[in-house]
Image (cartoon, rainbow over the protein chains, first blue to last red):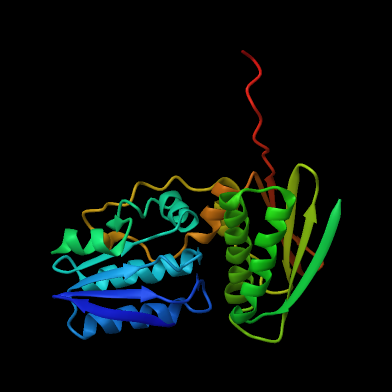
Length: 111
Length: 153
């Protein structure tokens, strides 16, 4: 999995550069997110604006990462396209993840 | 009716080319973006199950995806020759399961996996599973809904 990441104060912004998150890459996606947490990041904005497809495995990787960061940390999502958002709504994961229309809104909310 | 068969080796890395082709065929058939995504999602979930569960993640086996396009519906058959789907999984695919809303106060209680069959159940108009001649046949059907203007007034 490829990411483009930078820090905005204490917040890590990680943009997913791969367009598809399915079962073939979900384990590596999960490892990469957990590594961000292991590096000490406690507030993470995951920018999904370039992601065109996510399946249940990708969703599982996100849920696993949310568990790892725990109640004292924040993993929020931004920029989900309409199709990707439909997957979150179908599985009601839009109630579990804080989701923002863009990175700036997410950073403002976490600051 | 138009028909196409795609055959891949049982490697997860092969799924995306089939999924992308299915999405494009859906758009050609008249689905909107969300409908095409939903069909692509379901065929991906079905291929994942065939590779990881029927073939236990082993490469070197065949997964066949047959696509049938009619004027008003799309039918997909995902076929493998691996281990049959357990009866409780078949039940979940056909009947679905009433799952409570995830508790957003406690992410720790949310399961990471096991959503694929429910997604197929929820998004398709009809689903089916048959075990025939040592093959697993999973059928997915979705109607193509064309937006029509309301002429009743």
